[in-house]
Image 1 (cartoon, rainbow, N blue to C red):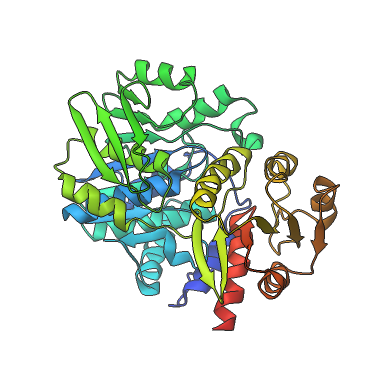
Image 2: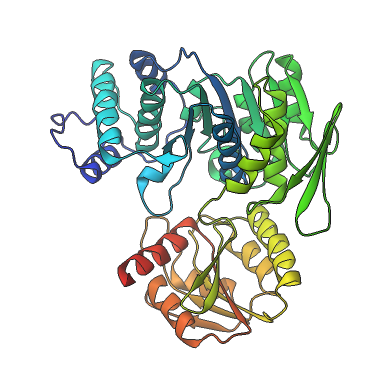
Length: 428
């Protein structure tokens, strides 16, 4: 256990480096160490409405939409998400705005004092999540919207009891930690369910038995898509319809995936909070998220950033891409800037994308767990591949070489997107 002297600094990066080294491992699932520190900080007893969102994919879009709608209604909302793409402050937002460095540093000081008083170590994710909770409590947030990091049952976010539990979907990801079947993973995600609360399941698959069992055990009201609520695209390129017992709404399409927007709307409607249709419309229109099928013009090229990093996420990406190409028929070829982490299902991701991508520009990531270039090459055997020393160099090449009928797709990992963001920041 690390007992170095407290850090007398206001530098956020120094604190983030500190939390990276306090605990022996980066991922350490379990709440035994976290609960005493959370109780010491006073963040487990709240006078606030809490939405907790777990799931394999779509958590970021769902939490973003939830917070945007609640902000539009005038609630004081704390939004916690992970990971960030460009800077750490993206993880913690008050009223839709990232908190500043000083706000985070002040919270880190409190978390460090509490963990020392409890004589416990905390992982980076545990410490930084608790800091977000400190900020929300001190800011007297009326609503907390919390995105689970990994799993659910043993994730630090689960020290807070939700008033509404949302499970976006279940796919095979993080199998080393969560289990190697849909049911095992569903069991972990279902750990956020508490007695007598509403639960939304937004997955377009059959409802996993583990979620049904946990809801039954907790006497929690379960609302599943295509069973208890429904959504359909109106087909006009502008609107969609939401329906549940007693509620029918015509709503605008947003920039985020409709599957996740509809999940957020379902959660809002069963939460018991007073929210007008006008706030729902306004929230959907304002909800934006970096790196989730984010379309940008850079120089004169069209670039799509998508952080999908597992088969389920990439299927999602491909569905959105097909819709985009229906309305943008000038694009006939796709060039991918691609890299992944070594512990992801690279072969399955490539197999899904290879009929869509014409040319792959690959490079190794500069982070722990990065896939080596040989691993990427092996998965891409038979494809048209160009190899680069860095993701930045691959992206620069794409900007210089693509023509008007080619679309640039940056994908494979949050870290791939982050490398391109850094390149664009340096070019400013």
